[in-house]
Length: 537
Image 1 (cartoon, rainbow, N blue to C red):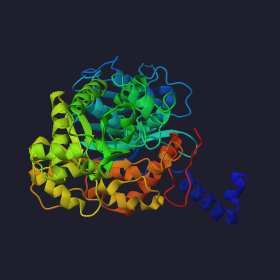
Image 2 (cartoon, rainbow, N blue to C red):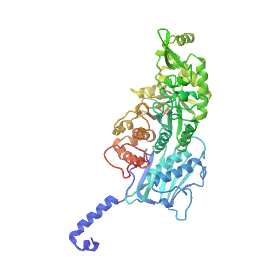
Image 3 (cartoon, rainbow, N blue to C red):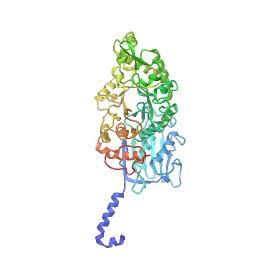
């Protein structure tokens, strides 16, 4: 319809204004719902700046300790260019300069440790300032810069015509807890390397920083040991197709490093070791029935010196393959029936003065394994069972609380003993549940126990546990995400600012749509739609 006609004919003016208002409402200035997890200090205005993939560059600040050639940041710049502009054909030249420079992200770090690995003391603090034509990102370390790049990528949005914008923003951010992990179980179901790498991607989007690899257990031993190759050739589901070669493990560790994610291996013993016995004779305890061997086997045999020689060699290899300073020794759910039935074990207990107390026998075993790993300069983590029966707790360092019930009561007991704590009890996500129950994982208050400030500082973080009884590569991603992201915010963000489920919901819904666009098959939270639905990539 002719505009002049609408203006001159009075009866059309009202409909014209209505149409104009409708266009403004539908296609007017948009902003992002927010950043997930919520930064510690975050101010944003409606002032927005255009961002164009043709004229967008990541550059290093002149005073930055890291410069071009830094593997972590060079890789992150390319990666985030593709995430910010998913329809752009190539990320080449993201480090360059242009005469028509419309927008640059200038990144500076105080310490240029570009070839190292993140560790328990790595700073992830960053501050980000977005103004016209420029974003300035400052961090103490490359790991903090990677977290800041993730935040910046979430600030960029598209309007309804496909143009990209970012709003004027100031952010000062750091994690509340230093340990923010996800456990994957690759023994009960084998997880292909690609599924693990995709999980590492999604972890980085939510700022998780520890991949706890529960790599072996009763059902299978997929880790291919160079020292004891029979462990996987006889203990894996299949000796060729269902194993992690040394090359596979290096690939996972290297990939995780570039995301600022630590890889924490777990070799759980003395229980959960049935698969170990297939490739290592005399390691497990022979069970007896009526005074004769029954032909079945129980936990690792703690009475034989050969057990500790084997463990020393295995953990020497593990410590050289996995660079992280932490190693998880397990120690949970040990069934004493087999030990009790074995006359040699009972005789050993009498010799050691343990009487009939099998918790003392297990404590003896764990203490020996802790000593082995300590000699390799590794900090050991154990499940809470070890703490519960251990009288000499001074040999322990980090305890992971996993049992249901009053888990904060257990946390309090552990910190009162002066030990560090990782909380897992409220965050077992392996059981299927409606996605809307994300709120139960969000409304967890890890420090809501009576204790001093010094004791509360001993709670170093928490982790999501994705056990593998009912999980493999077909359902791993939707079962994890976006529910795990609720845990991510609890472990990263300020508790007072993130106590409301209602306020968090639109941000999480928006973040879930971002995950879909990035190829992460995250489940829906409720009725609705994403502008860019999952494309099956």
